[in-house]
Figure 1: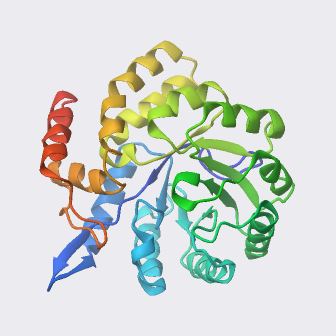
Figure 2: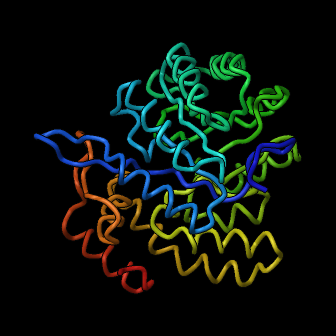
Figure 3: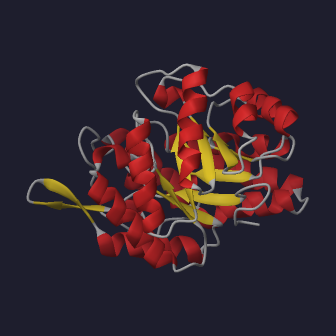
Length: 301
């Protein structure tokens, strides 16, 4: 299942990179490249798409650019898979504004990361997400303390799970124990999704219902196969496939995301290796390692 329901979003959702082109010294959104990427992802069998998350470099975009990217992804997906839009901001009011624009573009739901930099307490997090529920759309919470500087604790998630708009959680704390605790507290009230590609199999084993994946930008079919094999009870086969992908997972985070993912997609001939400052292209030594790993997985054209 990939649509929102009583137990939320499930399956592999790709946290899309945003293809860009160098134009006159600036990095401009590559609309044809984005449409091609969406089509390739859907043809590879992913369950859904996330536009304008961390991987999409949303923090470097204006609100107008974010709305444009979201509209393009929704149009290109054409209802074949659900599209979620990232609405991350340190400001609740800004997140509300981004959410309204995303819903006007036709998204299926919203990915709401914890407000970064200002380190709100748990009550502030609860009120932030409760306010976003006023948008009336399915919301996937997103906990990634390594990037945001705050941690959405299981007890706060349990409070938020009482709200019908809160349907899923992307958990990227890097802790299997954390997901076990969430599963014990929540049961099936929310779908829990892995936000750490190197831990996908481990998190599936303790109750995750899929992943919001960076890896699936680069190896969508393989990432989907790990989930599908696991979900169908073929656990040994799923683990074997996952283990093959772990070195690539590691390389995709050896430099800040999405630097390696864009380098990989460039090596695969899918987009230009262009990022917005302060992000810069991958270093040559790491790029060589990445190319060798893509070759070993037989992903290179």
